[in-house]
Length: 250
Image 1: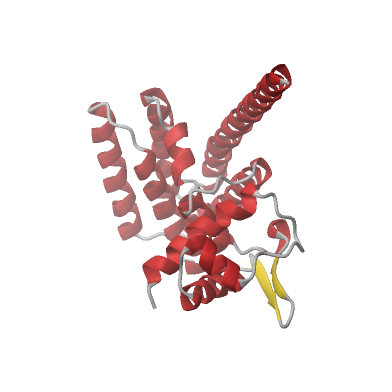
Image 2: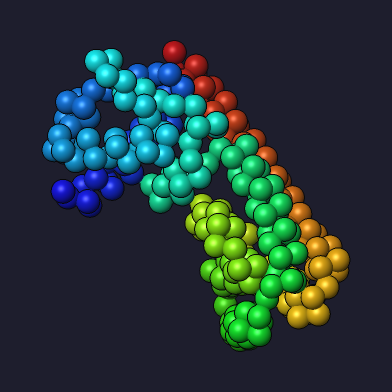
C-alpha cells in the first residue's frame, strides 16, 4: 500500500469537503469517482476512506455510499489534527473549544503535577526555560518551545492519557502559535509566566500556580477571540467587495 498516496488523498479530500460546504448526512462521490478525481488507485482510496471512517469523519453505508458525519459531535480529536496536517483551517468555534478544553486539562494536570512531580521533571523544565531564555536573548522566537514547556508541565502529572490528549491540542495549534508568538515581546511575557509556573511547581503551590496558569491561558483565549473576529470581518468585507465587482460587470 502506497501510504504517501493515501495521505495525499486524505489531505485533498478534507479541503474538498470544506470547500463544497458538505453537511452532515451529505453523500460523497463514489470510490470510482474519487479515484478519478484524485488520480489514485482503488486500494489507496479505500485505505484513505478507512482512516477517515475510523476517525468518524465519514461513514460508509453498505449498498448506499459514503456519507459525511457530524463533525462537531462525532469526529475524533485525531481528525482535528489531521485537518491541521492537511492545511484545513479549523472553524472559529472549534478553535474556541480547543482553547477552553486545553485550559481545563492543563489546570488539572498542574494540580496532579504538584503532587507527583519528581526532581527529573523539574530538571527537564529548568533546561527548557534556560534554552528559551537564550533564544529570547538572541532575539529568536519561541513558538515551538512554548509547546515543549507546556507538555513537559503536563508530563509532570505522570498521566499518559492527559499527556496524549493535550499533545493533540498542541499539534492542531502549531500554525496558530506562530501567529501568537510573532513578536519578541509576547515571547518575553510568556517566558515570565513560565518561570512563575515553574517556581509554583517547585514549591508544590497549586493555588498560586493555578492563578498564573489560568491567567496565562486566558490571555491565549482572548487573543484568538480578537484574531478570529478580525479574520471573519475581513472575509466578510472581501466577500462583499467580490459581490460588488460582479454586480458592476452586469
